[in-house]
Amino acid sequence: MKDAKKCGELAETLFAAEIMRRGGVPSKPLGDSTPYDWLVHVGKNIWRVQVKSTWHCVVRQGKRSASKCRVTISAGRWAKTVYTKQTIDFVAVYVDPFSSWIIIPSHEIKGRKTLFIGRSDCEQPSWSLLGLA
Image (cartoon, rainbow, N blue to C red; front, top):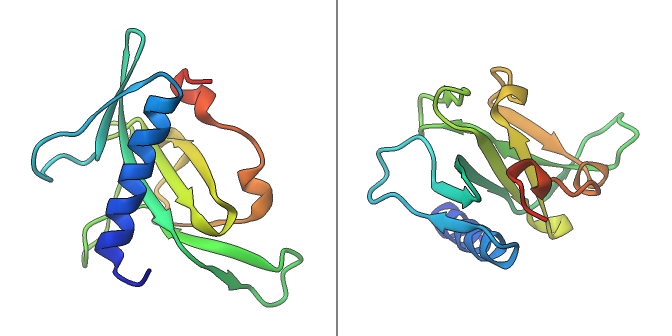
């Protein structure tokens, strides 16, 4: 899939389905003026989650790990704004080449706008950060 908008929409749909499958309740704000894509209700907690996705890997020369998937974890099409713990609680990244999700707490973003994710990063289940099995 080459259309970035459609890729994002598909990732958000997959995210909502996964939250429901694991027993959470996803809620989508109307419009797109919030810094998060979803509110996730788990027990007494309500988490603000921004969904991102990556659909292909790149080979990084000179690195031991043959391939990494690049994902932009900032907001805005041109002037990128970094997410903070004041605006979101988690970033959920769908990594299509590995058919996996990674849940990243906002305090771990630390001002980064881009992440490189390898297969080993996808091996640890991280849904428990949201209180889901």
